[in-house]
Image (cartoon, rainbow, N blue to C red; front, side, top):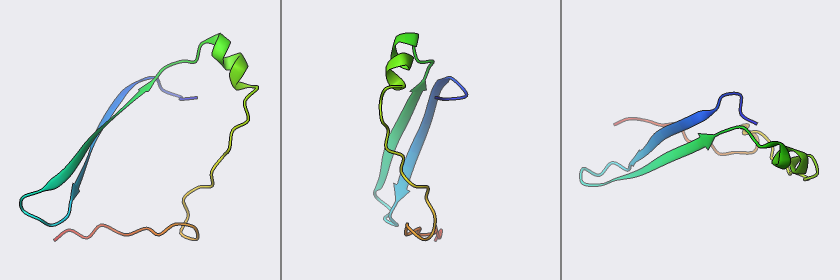
Amino acid sequence: MAGIYGTFRQSLVLDFGSETAALIQHLIVYCKPIPDQLMSLNKQLVTDKTESWILANKRIIPFEPK
């Protein structure tokens, strides 16, 4: 569950060093309270929790501006 409800917008821009092209993806997340009917169903569901991002299990490539 979210601690803050609302609409959150972010644009992700990937620049691969070319002067003519960049990749842009607009992201929107809507967070709102879960109705009571869904909350009771949610308690019955089994969720799979993934592990956190740590250096031991991920390859993180730092950004280096040109």
